[in-house]
Image (cartoon, rainbow, N blue to C red; front, side, top):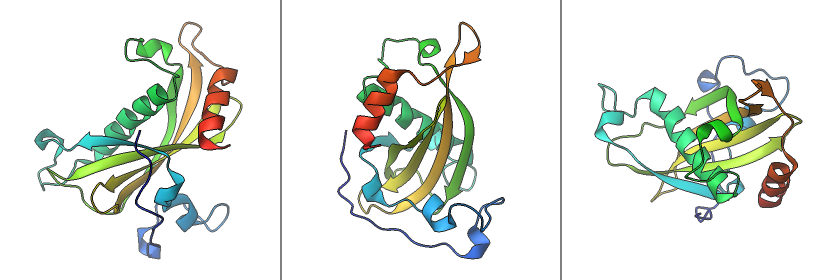
Length: 175
């Protein structure tokens, strides 16, 4: 685990950069989509490979979700909720909703890391905020909000977040 050493920063994007469906009701755009680095306690480094690029030389938009997923798995391992030799069928979470805001292009060779934090624990779901930052400068390249649902693959049903998961996440995140 790497702790944040970039300090808080952020920027408000112009109205034209707001994602579709973001309204004045509810959480503000800048609060929802411009998380400060200091809010993240866990970061995972990611290598940007040549095969991750689109024809324009930028990181392909589909790879952002892959980078987020890879960091989330390492977050779960760090919290002791999953092990490298465990089957993904036993991890017990599925992705229910995902939102990404692209702030700056990512290119081959960029040294980036993905921040992961759980911001909300519901009954059967958890909200996970993520960002991709430039390792050297701390510049935020993308942000994301993911909703994960706890799931029993044997019964094919959603389940209540297990108490040990809730305890470990709450302790780590200060929820």
